[in-house]
Image (tube, rainbow, N blue to C red; front, side, top):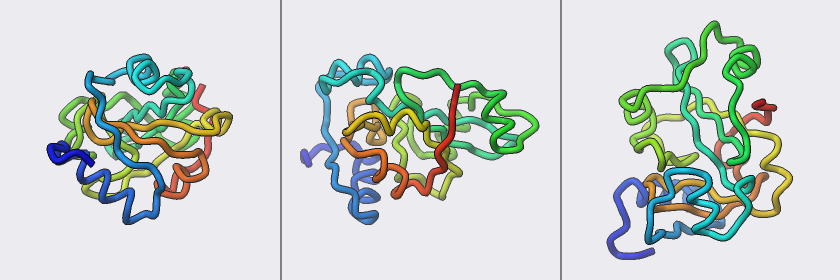
Amino acid sequence: MPEKLHPNAVRVASALRELGATGEIVVLPDSARTAAEAAAAVGVDVGAIVKSMLFDADGAPLLVLTSGAHNVDVNLIARTVGAEKVRRAAPEFVRAATGQPIGGVGPVGHPAPIRTLVDSWLGKHEAIWAAGGHPHAVFPTTFDELLRITGGTVVEVE
């Protein structure tokens, strides 16, 4: 890892090591705040990018890890988790729940565990790329490893 790795990326890298994940944090020269930017930066199809989307589900954080090619149907997610209301979390809510900024939220490395749903479509890719806690940090993983390290539940998101 580079010497000047952002502290959020250091936390994600530490969590990955502790969880026995195989991927290493890669620092990108440019921001990868969107799935399209991340896909272009690492040279993969946008569907192989893991979008980390934090939602407010009846006041509790809910992390949805979806394919970069998908949108999340909040009504479907609400029915899936049995919530009355699911909405995109405000930036302050995201930061409080994950310790990370929108555009760089990793699937791990949060201050406390977050209920996590994983888009089944990510399983169609041999390798997938997720955010590493900062908009310039990503790491490669697999669908099975992502499920294992997050304790996530496989769902349909759209």
